[in-house]
Amino acid sequence: MKMEKVIINSYKEFEAFSGREIGVSEYVTVTQQQINEFADATLDHQWIHIDPARAEVESPFKTTIAHGYLTMSMLTYLWHSIVDVRNVKMIVNYGIDNLRFAQPVLVNNRVRARVSLNSIINLRGIAKIQVKIVLEIEGSKKPAYNALVTFLYHFNDSEK
Image 1 (tube, helix red, strand yellow):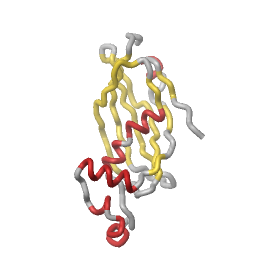
Image 2 (image 1 turned 120 degrees about the horizontal axis):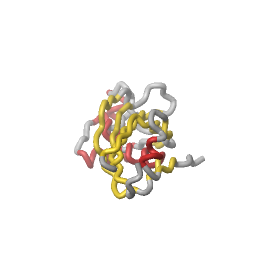
Image 3 (image 1 turned 180 degrees about the vertical axis):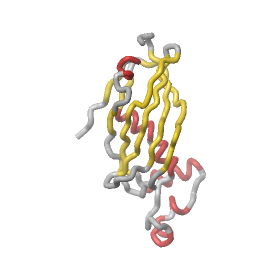
């Protein structure tokens, strides 16, 4: 069952979510191919990520794990699967605060993002939003990470 995206057209519509959950993404499986391609793209070829045979013997997890930054890089996809922000000229990734990796994501784990609006301020017509993102691992009580992520949304109109 495909989840309905939250549609946001203005600063005021964003502001309505202040202090509330915006939504939860669908689960996405983290594959060994993704891990290997991320290792190639970032030049991080540590065996715990890319060598399943060695990980089965030497790793405390008995399998390979995703790079923490791979799971963070999935944030944009997961965010956009929850929210469709319309009427914008530009969106800028502004920062990540309080990022804590609480638990590794094992190969073939399924993850999803749970997102709430932590704060929103108007910077001369630009919506500076900070969302709390929790990356949940299916079947686990402990999340992969928690972070406060800030975006700048430049809306087409000056509606406040």
